[in-house]
Image 1 (cartoon, rainbow, N blue to C red):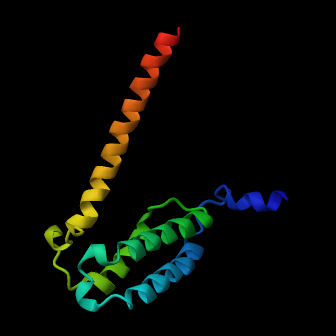
Image 2 (tube, rainbow, N blue to C red; image 1 turned 90 degrees about the vertical axis):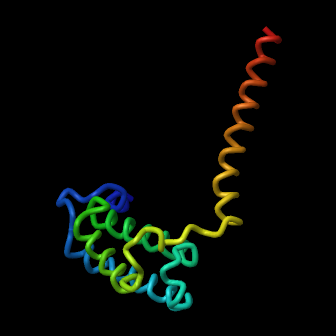
Length: 135
């Protein structure tokens, strides 16, 4: 039983950088395989592959933590930067070229949380008024 706990907290020896650098390429390989399904001319449009990119960064975070290192750290960041160069070197550095997702995606992403917040606030206010009346 107790051996399994070793994975939950970083090992006493601290960050095993060598092992981390051995693990990270698996994340890069998976990301590369997924990017091959995206047409090359869409590689500068983040909304085309945001899901793949998020799972790639999550993967680097998990692999980094498993070997007892903090994330992000300089080695992990330089690995991620290398992957960036591989796929996005032809994209202009100008942030405007990382196009926003189309409005039909963007508007719900913004409005849904706002509406939920307003609705929840309304419920809380309504409940607090009704409990006052009960008292």
